[in-house]
Image (tube, rainbow over all chains, first blue to last red; front, side, top):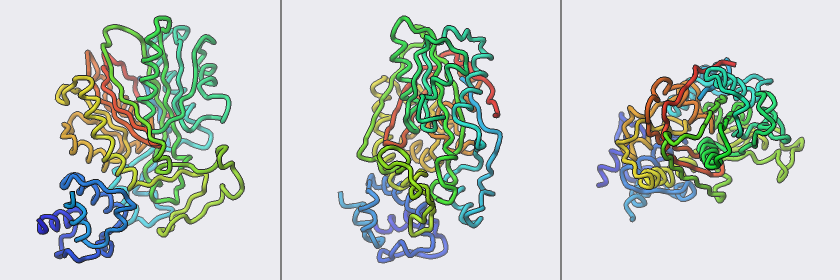
Length: 73
Length: 339
């Protein structure tokens, strides 16, 4: 599951040159932008049927935070 | 139906006076707006609608004395008063017996207008209705705010509706949610926060250095997208079920042209046939409520012979959102006019 999530997230960020980890702070990726944010919430909805408001999203810091939120239901 | 667009074309990749070209390219690629049309200082939404209406009335040899209803849909009117629809009644030489009023709503408004016309036309006495929908959103948003600078364009459309049993039944779902008023807004310049020297002043509004005044529009793109995820797919499923329409029975699907990202998401989420979803976002941008009729005029000319079940879906400032299954029967579409 974690592996698939990392693959999904790499695709969203269009990261091809390196691996990413669960403890990464995703806002520190050079690929992070307000447009990447839209791609992430679209991915969370499509792949995990998970919707999140912007205020709640701001509380998520690491890749693991994202993963935990998406799988909490 | 007919449409008019300003002749001035804005190439978005070259719209770089306030932002570096590489940033512009990234935004433009994502939102999918490559060109838009900007009205000049003197051209109002009503002028675009007037040109579209003249084209429609002339091409179809419509007797103006038979037009009993005129609705002007816009949030960029000529004046605060009188209503622009009344000015258009005179300019278009329509009879004084015309029932005319403005409809002040955002991107979903064409569906609201169409539904209102259909409701009015249930009355036997009304013969023909003219639904004019125009916006000059280029005048609403700051070119120095990257969240809105590359999206919006200007256009006007005219739709003539008449009553006839052969047009069959159409279905509308119209929704509103004022708790989301702050997602898209112009905060000042009305009567709640009147215009002052201060509200006209340009300011840096966020950590990204975006600049606008309180009298220019803003949009919280992320929250709007969240709203779309939550409300639009379910509303479309609702109207399809209510009208007893299977998505395979639809001839065309016209989405509000918000941006390519959102429409790609919706098509994928609802598993819709993308061949049935015409798009004009690339060449006209987001023209607010005009985008639905503009896309029909631009992309479906000569394609609406016989019966055509068309799904319309739009959402925007308010927030308001609407979905409809409308039968377009032998709909005549004129060439787009440049003003």
